[in-house]
Length: 171
Image (tube, rainbow, N blue to C red; front, side, top):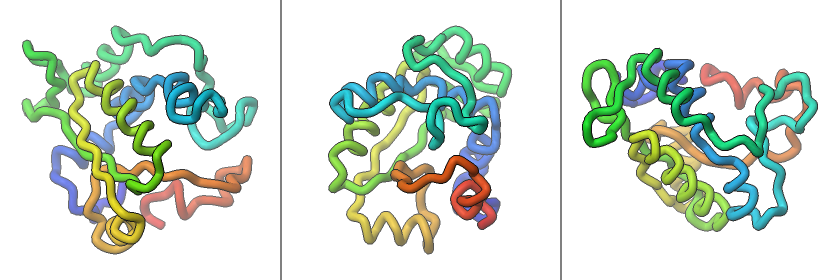
């Protein structure tokens, strides 16, 4: 996370919280993304590396997310669900953020709709920001006016050192 990003202090705290980031990742049903958004022409993965890579965090794509374990992890990170099911941080703020992508990419729009539903099951509200590509790139590289962005990378090397400009927010 870029410390100079124009995010609210609450959102900065969420995204800097390792337990929160892992829980959000674990809530996403990757098998649904592969089956629906890519019409079964994709293999579920957790990260940009192929199965078997030494850099890949092990997971089972066929196992459904363990909701109880994920909620326990969120609680350990300072989050709680209220009586209406909304996830709240330690200060009581509802967890809600936007994810931007390029509107012209049908697969990414479908992915975001699925991700939105996955995170809603844990009480997280996602707003989809569908932008034209020039606006998305301007926000990403100049104004930094975004919470999260869904894009694709191609030609990813098996060694993450070759893309440090992508992985490090300080780059």
